[in-house]
Length: 454
Image (cartoon, helix red, strand yellow):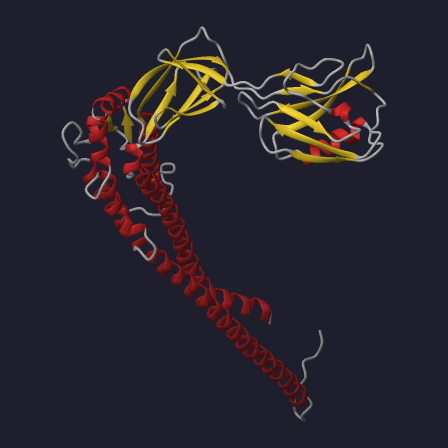
């Protein structure tokens, strides 16, 4: 007998139905877990957009816009007063450049000593110079000591004479902040006096540090830096380039751009949620007689409850005069269920009813909070969707346990069948042997007529 084939057939007949059932259950469970995860991700993005728009500070912010950012940029704090200003940048604030007198290229310090570097009337920084130090070594010693001061040293050589000058450059802007060097005895060659201009014979100033000069509404003003604070209350002007003939308009107003960006973020998040739920609940027909493809949450009650709650809030009136519905902002529902924005109408609403827009979106009774209350019970930690995922994960664990039990049962059944079939095979062999013996014995008895061969 072909025992392996018989045992295999019986085991397969026993195992196949249960295994097919577990496979179907596992596929359905895994699909639903994945679908719920996708839904929760879309809901989380939606809630983030709700939180960002439900911030009263967003509607308190002020923006400062420059009509020419190549010359000037501006920012404003939330306490800045709305207004329009005409600005001209006549001169940028700069740092100084000073230089020593011209020195031979192979110059070395004849004695050890100290160079004291000052920016304007500030505190001096002492730099020790070793005897025999070359110009390059002096430069490196200066840069190491001055690395946090905004001052750097460099060497420039005149090819026609071969002579070199030590040049000090400063990023410290503002009038009176020229870089000077005073020396100890023997190092006078490195002296720089800011009272005079640099010449081949004396150290001095190449370019003097200067203030920024500009006008606001015709009033002449100066600043030691190109970052101007306080000229316009709670507004910071960053001077980028000078052009005394060009007038720049700086407009300080409510931060309509920031609010618009957050409204569009909310609309995008809602549309993504709609597209996600449509994908998870749709049924797609395949061919004429093919099995339809279904989303992981077809007919799911949680999806219906979430969408129903959100859509009820979207059409509910709220806020105050001027803005009570999304349609007042140019936001309407399209044929596919997503939201569309009329940019022109939204801009007009923000210009004419900025505070009313804030009241409509923010606060305990604002649209963003009402929408969040509709979905939070589903998506929060330990919420409905999380509990459903936990239940499905428990089902997955149970499927695994059932598979293990099935394998043990099949192993036991296989062993039992082999034992039974082997015993039966042995018995058949024994009976066959007995039959042959009896036949032989009986044929040899007296009186038994044997068949003659033909």
